[in-house]
Structure formats: structure tokens, C-alpha cells
Image (cartoon, rainbow over all chains, first blue to last red; front, side, top):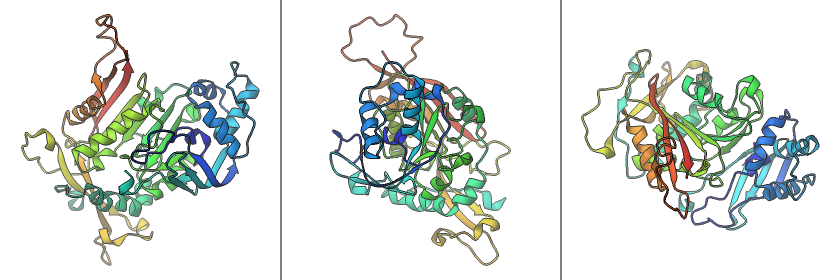
Length: 122
Length: 288
């Protein structure tokens, strides 16, 4: 699946593409919303690991504008519920992710992003 | 028993990528469902490692197969997350719903590094890098693990088949040839996968199988079997090329007072052993 938890970790790995290669931009996506179990303990501890701006922007690309531009200092339940939804309940089933630097297109099929490169791109 | 005997081989070094395509990737695509049906019990060492992962941590399973390690014990589901990476789409189709829950999976090679540097708290690679056909490629796959782990606290566990098979193993390994060259440690073999009839009806890539009317299909998968100490040495060699020395935070307490411009990177080998026909190494990265 490609949820934003995974998108926040992926970067372009085409040979020589080492700058401005994160975050990948979504293109022509088909999105499904599926409920996931809420776990406040996971979210609280996971927050420092997130590239915040990338997550907020990716949420917007997928039509969700609920996250604040700045990470709040107090991680209250209302905030964690929004974070939970953006991180774990929006599934990108089809479409692509495109490198902002080199333009490489990583296709997403049946929820699985194809990060394989051809021999010449490695 | 005769069909379980492994076949000594020497991996072609002309084109390791196409060799692995034929003797590893194509085969897993063909045997995915049958293979998956035999892979459900976690190895004790892996289970113990995953049980120690704190809440909120995120990890990578490089070579996740059917996703059995993307699952957590019921009470720990969702406490930490493991992202699966594999080269077989058919195995990922199983992995993405392992244990009846949506899992996160990406299609990639363990020789690829499609991650932000230092993004993961932990990484495991279980029964995967023994499918890479040169020492250089096995080392590169370990370097990808090291690069995607947090340099300050990333933890890893690598697990591969050993030349030493336990008595219960159905495999018989030919006695190794004496070798002293460090480039050629361990043993390269082809291990037959015998497709049972109930799975034989699925669509097969028959080029690799020697199927006849009444015998089961046999697929010979390439493995590099590791000898004792080989995996540990390879992990340390991989780390050294990334300016990461072997060390232990406890042993160096207070010994170094010199001024450093950048923190120095270290790898500590936590555990290095053998379990049920496999070699494993557990390590931790730190910097100071």
C-alpha cells in the first residue's frame, strides 16, 4: 500500500539524483479511505520522525488539508486523530509518484509502488 | 530425500543481475503461493528482536516475502510499523494483507535504496541476501540497510542460510571445498524447490522447471551459504566503507576527549550466532 507513512520515507534513487529528490509528488492518483486502528502511543512517539512539511503537502495533494503548517507543541487527541487519518487511512491505490528533481515516474499499481529502476538508471 | 539434496554451483560473475533474475526472482514469482504457505512461523531470534522494538518506531523489512514479519503479536499491532520491501510482486500481493490487515509494501530490489537517509529506527533482512550472487552485491545490500538506518540509534538484524545445517533440516549440503581466499568464503549452491501438486495448477514459468506428466515441478534457487564468522565480517566491512568503525559505547566511555568536528559513526555487533541452519548478526549504530 502507499499511505503517507510510507511516502514520507521514500525518495528518488535514480543514479546521480541526490538533491531535491524528496518528497516525491503524486500524479493521477486513485485514493481509497480505509479505517485503521488508532494508536496514540505510536503517533506521539512517531511525530519526531516525520518530515512535517512533506506530510502536510502530500496530504494536500491527496485532498486533505486538516494538518497545520507548523507541528504543534502540544500533541492533543484532536491533533493526533487528524494525524492518524492522514498518515494511515488514506490509501493511494493507483497512480504515480514523480521525482521533483529528475522527473522519474514511480508507478503505483494495486497499492504497491514500483521503485525498481532499469539497469541504466542504477 | 534425493530431490532435497543441494547442487554445488558457481554463480556466474559475468552478469550477476541476470543470473539472479533466472535463479531467484523468476522462481519466487512462480512459487509465490506455495512458498508463502510454508512460511508462517517466525524464527525465535527475529521474534525476540521485534518484541524489543519500542512504541513509535518505524522499520524496514528488506526482503519481506509474504510479510510474516510485517505482522506483530496482536497486542503490539500498530505500536510500531514495519515497511516491507521485496522483489516479487506476487509475494507482495500476499504481504500487503498479511494477517488480515493492510500492510505497507514497496516493490524494489535490496540493491536499491529508495529511502531518505537515516529514516528508519530498525531494519531486518531475513533469508534474503543469501540470494545475491557476489560478495560485492551482498555487501552493497548491507550498506543500503546501514544508510537507511538512523546513525544515532538504528538497529539491524540480518539472517542468512549457513553451510552448517541442523540435524532436522531436510537439506544435505555437500562438504565444502577448502578455501582460504576471503573473497570466496561460504558456498554457492542451487537448492531445489519441489512444487507440491496442490499448488502446481497455478500459472508457472516453466522454463525453470523440469516438469513431466507425473512428477512435481522442481525449481532450483540460487543460495550463497555463509560459513561461520563470514556474515559478521561482511557487516563490518560494509560499515567500514561508510566510515563506520566497529565499537561499543560502553568500552569507550571517557576514553576519548579529543575535539571532533563531526560525530564519528560506529557499529556495535550485539549478537552474532547460529540458529536452526541460519547465521545471524544483530547490530546497532551509534555516533559520538
